Length: 436
Image (tube, rainbow, N blue to C red; front, side):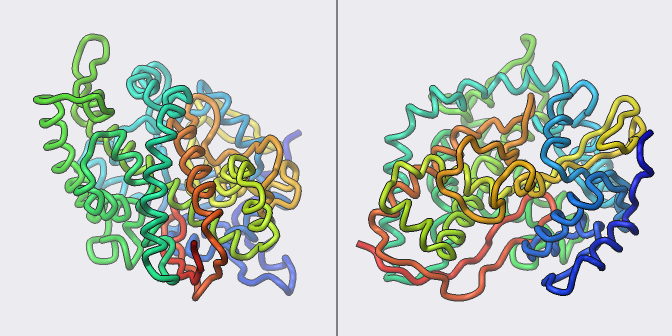
C-alpha cells in the first residue's frame, strides 16, 4: 500500500526540527520564492531534508498552482525517461496563477512561450531536429579552436583588469554569450543587449536585473516583447541574406513543408540565445567559486589541466542552473510510494538530484575527477539539453586556458546570487587574483 502523502506542513515540521546547526530553515513552499534561490545553502539544506524525510511532498505555494515536489535523483530520472506519461507542455515552469493568466491573455498560452521545453511527442521531435545537427558532438568538436580563441580573449581581458574584478559580471557572463551568438551569426555589437534581455527574462523579480519589482506580471510580457522586436528584425535579415549560421537555419526552417509557426519560431530563438549561454555562465562562475574555497582541487587542476573535462561536469552539477521543470501525468501514477492523480502538477528539483547522497559521494564537495558524473543538470531523456555538448566544451576549455595563467585567486567580498526560482546563478563575485 502506498504511504500517506506527506504535505507541506509535514515538510515544514521536518525542516523546523532538523537541528540546531542549520544556517536557515525554509519551508517547502520556498521552492516558489525567487529570493530563496539567492540563499543557495538554505535551498541545499532544504532539499537534503526533503530527500531524507519527504522525497515526494505536496506543496501549495501561495498564489501558485499546487504541486508535488520530487527531490530524489532516481525518481526524477525515471520521470524524465517516460515522456509519454509525464508531459512537459501543459504547465512547464512554476509561475503564479496571475502570471499564467497574464501570459494566456497576451500570448495565448499560460507558459508565455512555446519552445522545445514546452513541447511533447511528435511536435517536440519535429522542432528539435531543426537545430540538432548544429549541437551534435561532432559539430561542436569542430568549434574547439574558435571557442579556445574566444576563451583566450576574455581571459586576456581578465588579466588586463589589474588583479581585481567581478568574475561573474566581467568574465563569466560574456564568454558563453559570445560563443553561442557566434554560432547564431549575431554580431558582437549585440552582446550587451542580449545579455540584458536574458537577465531580465530569467531574473525578472531580481531587484538588480529584472522589471518585475516595478511591472509585476507585466514584466515578463515586456521582456518577451523586447525580445520579439529584436528577433523579428534578425529573422528578416537572415531570410533576405542567409548565412552559414544557426539563426539562418531557424529563420528559414520548415516543418512538413510549411514555415514554422511565427510564435514558435520566436520562442525557438529566445530559447537558444538565453539558455544557450546563461546556464553555462552560471556553471563557470560556480566552478570558480568552488575552486576559491578548495585550494586542493584548484592545485590538482593546475597540475593536470586534462582533468578540466571531468571538472566541467562537476561544476555544472554543483551549479545546477535550471532549478526545475514541471511535468503533468497523463494517468494516475505512484512515485516513491505516493499516489499522484492524472492532471496534477509535478516539480522536478534538479539541484536536489545533483546532490543526492545515494548517487554522489560527498555531494556538496567539488570532486574534479568524479567518475561517470550522473548529474541531471542537463535533464534526461528526450528533453535533455540540446546544448549540453557545447556547455561542457566551453566550461572545459575556459578552465584549461585560464588555470595555467592563474598564479592565485581568492574571493574579495560576498558572492551574490540572482533571485530566480527557474534559472539562477551567481550574479556578482568579486575576486582578487594574480595572472601571468
